[in-house]
Length: 439
Image (tube, rainbow, N blue to C red):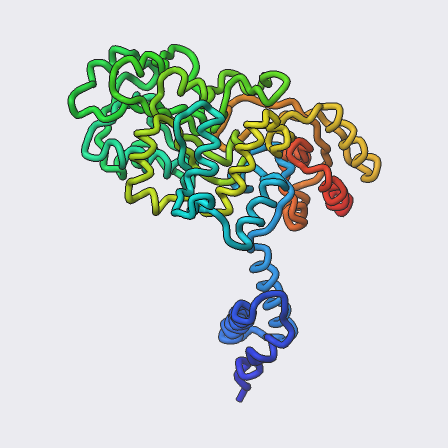
């Protein structure tokens, strides 16, 4: 009688003794999974090799390690790559987060008075000052900011919004669904491509709590279109709330020598407030260039109402986010936002990128310098590009996968791998060159 091959399977402890690199429980799970897979093969009459089982377990450990959150080199040319974490955070902002996070802070404590304070007195108030608003609060993302404002100010009442602005944002979240979750009633006006002031006027009633204007930051509509400016909406009477989305603080970009052409007609938060918006919400990790957050700025009375709402506690930002965002706000108030990585990357001169690309080409045979076009990404500035420079090498999908295993994400064009240097930190050039050489 033939012996059951399953009897020859190694024990979990035997496999486990040859694994490392993860906590014990995760190593045990990898060992058991490898043994279970071998048991299934044995049940089918296939041979099993203890060394192969150990190798399988090690592969599973490596896969689990690769799934852990870790740094990646972004060579895609997408500055605000949502899948890669959007805006990189500067060293000074990270240092502020570490300093506040490693111990105690005055997060909700007024040191001079010795009394309880508010976490909104830090980053929120500074960002409000940066755009000329009366007050500001910070929550965990812009979707939360919109939901909180609508829930606090328009629950069981009507919110008037253009049909052309009922957009879907990243991850499948749709503005109408967020509005519905807030308990407010949507009143759609106009058509997909044209919404006039008279459309809003006809929709107003005693039940109108807000007029909502949503910046369609992730798509661009051209042709036979018409929208109603914030100033005209503000003249209608009810408070106007603007979801600015991408978070450009000031469309004149006073922190730069001049407004970059790639910003085109991107609206600014300051300009929306100047035009009469009562509240403006926007993201912290898009064109603001900070950590993931949602910011609400505007009239003090409305902001206070929002901050007092029960949902505000569920959506509030943590102390390290606020510390990092405070540093970002101070950079804007200093008038030098180029020390924010996003703006430094976006405004790096072509000549600098060209020199870096040529240095890589010199050290890696088969690589060419090419002109490329970077994009903002993150649902901002659709269809607009930023002139850039990259390096390119002819290789197939296997090469792209090899780069990913080295922690580098690139793109392909015409059967060539393209690594756009606008989104690669200069201190990662050597790592990129070594990975390209390995191809």
